[in-house]
Image (cartoon, rainbow, N blue to C red):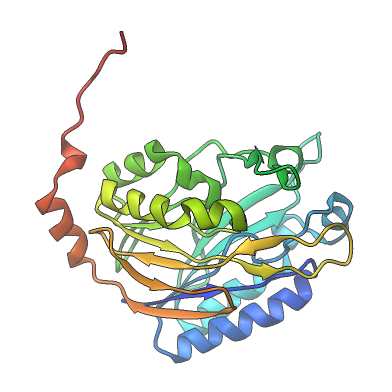
Length: 276
């Protein structure tokens, strides 16, 4: 299956972001991609809670979701909307960071709320408290497609190997990791983590990313690492998106999953080990 990863530089205006995203999705489809993936928070990258309250919508009203579902149907493609920041009805007002896999019929084939929140202090000048604005998800997600079973994850999840092992042992042959990674941790950890998840599971790892400095009408502009990656089931980096917005197109071969797992059948070698 010809597959395309979009590397975006989304700002805090969902309408403007949607125009760019739709154009890139259409371009990827014209290039022959039958599976297209966008990064985390495709609709809105913002560090301002008040701006998010102002522009974000509930899932049933979200214009980005509606438009991209219609585009998937019109183009006849599978589309991973890496994630959308969405309002919820939670009493504390926290948002959901929700990934969607859309079928060529425009239906939601699977959805997943990011489970692990990025609550870290990277340096004296860079800290994140994602759980203050977003509520964590509590379920994993798998979906059957013609090019393999797909397991959905988001960004910081990549540091939690048990999630990927669980998805792979549940049948996942393709693991998606849409991200808006910090430049500091990205430079140090992004590629090693993604390669490790591929090697451990013998699965394709597809990681479309946000990049650059993100336009902000309110609050401090965020910066993200870019370098969207495609990693083969053997752990090889097949493509790297660099630091600018753009599109990666690769051929996704399901047979490589079976080959990698036959050579190193680690998914079948679990043992119960007691900590003493």
